[in-house]
Image (cartoon, rainbow, N blue to C red; front, side, top):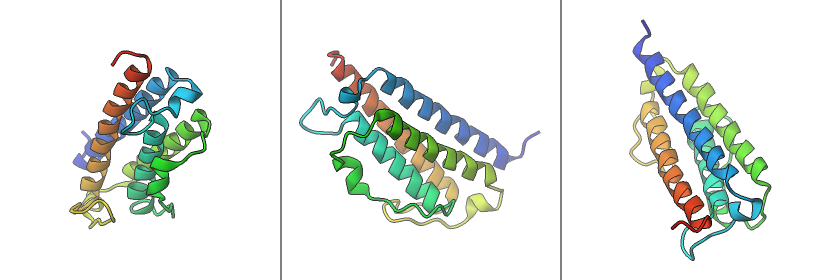
Length: 156
């Protein structure tokens, strides 16, 4: 029988990995140009949302839990004008998810409850809360990405 710590880690690992696969599946439907197209005057392109998720995970888990040293440039996540190849952008997201998975696998019953703080994640009280908030944030943006793909296919 697994302990609670392993159960929590396994459940979160599964979600993060499924979310990364979902982003890749959605991106596969897009050309390089569509990946960076904003179909509406408001909002973001699919590519910018991937940059944003990568920055989010790399900072809130990578820097604040796994001590990777990542320095976030949040504004660039939404304003980068260079149309980086989508495979490169998706590869960076995969690398960020790998950091999250590795960090989750290293959590212990005691470490889940360690104090957590980070600029922009106000009110997060412990590591579990940080992982959970990042997972729900990831899921939220997958919904936006799904909507963008439909819009770019002319289905909106």
